[in-house]
Image 1 (cartoon, rainbow, N blue to C red):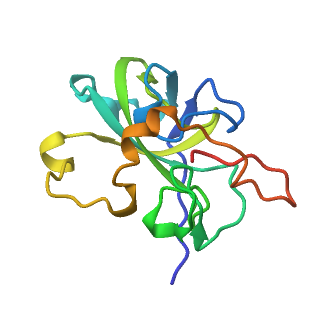
Image 2: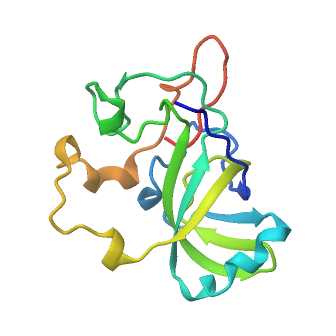
Length: 171
């Protein structure tokens, strides 16, 4: 396959400089605030976005090194295939979070419920639309019985590559 090249549209600023102890999903990050600094030439693309309460952010897990096809995710104690988890150790280090939009000032989007590291490169923003994004009949497999505790789950160093000492991105 032909490689794909993406340029960040901005950067996400959060209170998390290290992954240890940070929330592992946006739904468990209630109240943690951040700011998206959008590239100034893209501000026109924000038109009508202030009408939305929530945004889907797609971003690069910029501090993740290496990949794994099976992982033990934060919310379980046994291994699963990488594509059956939200682990950051993915073949393409792409993260996805739904956050609350608090307001827009110029090229800054003020957001809440952030679960990514400070300085995370933002690839795209999409509006969260419950009628389009929610699937009432969805099955969640091994997550069943575990998602109710996500607010208490915090990341640790399990996805840090021992040889490079890097801290991973959003778990």
